[in-house]
Length: 388
Image (tube, rainbow, N blue to C red; front, side, top):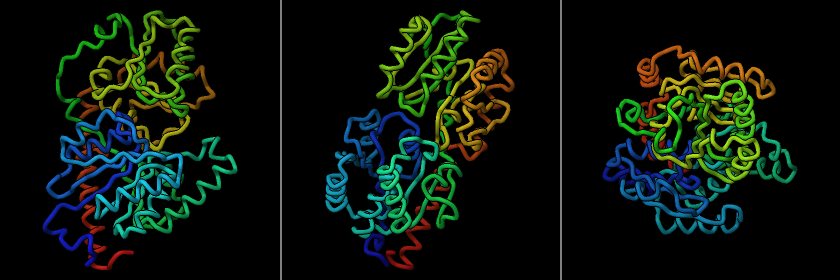
């Protein structure tokens, strides 16, 4: 029996998640839903945040009994290795390490094996195969090396989609499962009154095109704003609602200002509960350059919204096909036509949409069952076979 698991039957399994700043983004929101719903008498979840910044979820993480350890210097690999080593050595021992950053997981697995953490999981949340800066020779070499370290040192691999699995782990990877990130459907059932239109000064007669996502290059806000500007020339009763924050927000605000759209576009910043915002939207647009899955797309479907998404979004995200349309980013006319059509067409009721999400793999309750079983089985296997 391994030293980390010798008392596993008497205490919770200790799981160390490595993530970015715990803000309301896809991966981090999913992790929060896992923390909220998992049996915390069986699993003690701690978090290392590799950016070392204050996050929206930090206080809630601590209130739920989890420990939060900022680990700065993610851009300085030697400093990162030193900081992570110190956290594992001083706060451990851990039974499981579960890493969520993309290439950085290679270094995380190296350190985890050095400190004999028996179960070492890498979780791929994105498909970066089309990302241009990953083709830079230096960056390409770094990613190749990190993938090698993952394959050598990880004991198990998870991915949110087939595309994200191929992106980080390649073909024919062993010890791999696809686990679609689920959402918490309870807020969609609750009839909580929130007058978002009044709070953000959006006229009642306006039809709303919505988007949720960090202001980063991959989310392609510039494309969406340009499409919206053209749609507005055809229909003045439109409003664009952008939920999120990030490094490119000022750029997009400048684009909106130059196009004279300030009265027709609302920037809400990060919102912990996005359901009231989804409920006032008429159509959801998601023109990303790349995604691992696109959890916001699943949330939009749970609200019964028609979704117009780029064809870079994995088709597994189409939980309710009647609500989904995938289009190439090169076809701007098709985007305008599809959004116009969706504004006046609701193929199924919001009640039916939520029911179908509830019965799918995208329900967080299904995730919790699968993840709890996986953690237990992997630790049991280590008990029998010893640390690899």
